[in-house]
Length: 57
Image (cartoon, rainbow, N blue to C red):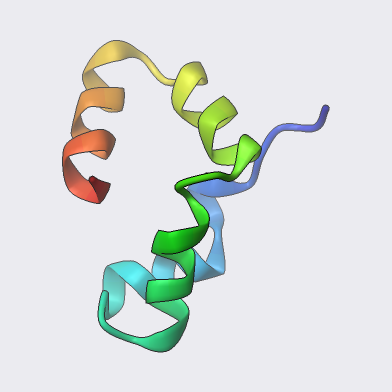
């Protein structure tokens, strides 16, 4: 499996810019079940994983 592009995802950038936008809300819904997002989180160091989890959950 290729590395997920979560770090540079355009939808994630849209969510960061405006969480209430349509595409931002779709991205937020999408990460609940996305296997790429789960793989991305597992690949992060514990401190960065905690920051990301707090920001998006």
